[in-house]
Amino acid sequence: MENSPVPLFPPVDAEGELLQSGYRYALSLTHHGHDAEDLVQEAWLNLCRRYGATISRAALFTAIRHLFIDRCRRNRVVAFDSIEDVNQPLAAPQGLQPGTATDVEALLGKLRPGEREAVYLHYVVGHTAEEVGILTNQPRGTVLSLLHRALKKLQSAVSASG
Image (cartoon, rainbow, N blue to C red):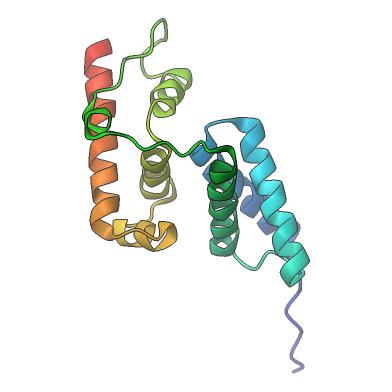
């Protein structure tokens, strides 16, 4: 039995799934479709230039996150929130049908990027708080605080609208 070489590029289905999960992750960071597409494309190209292929989902997510941080720094978008802003409840979106995708998207759009990222990685992707901390280079306690604050904001906005 001959050892077959490991293919340099993953099969098309796996590649498509990887791109889709990268896009969803980028969308959770930017909350803007075109910016998310740009991040995924640039991260993918950077990884392909450097390694010849995208090695893993973790590598893609890390590349997307670093590009997002670089863009925020470049555009000076990173805002420091005061303690009062962090604990301030979200305003419920007006004129939206509760529970619809548009309603959920509007609510998530009002969260800070760090909170949105933690919510996405924990509740959508299914990572534990410790894994989210490793991915985002934050202590587990910080991730748990972000999740707690985000859920508290979302619950107060939902109860205010209903």
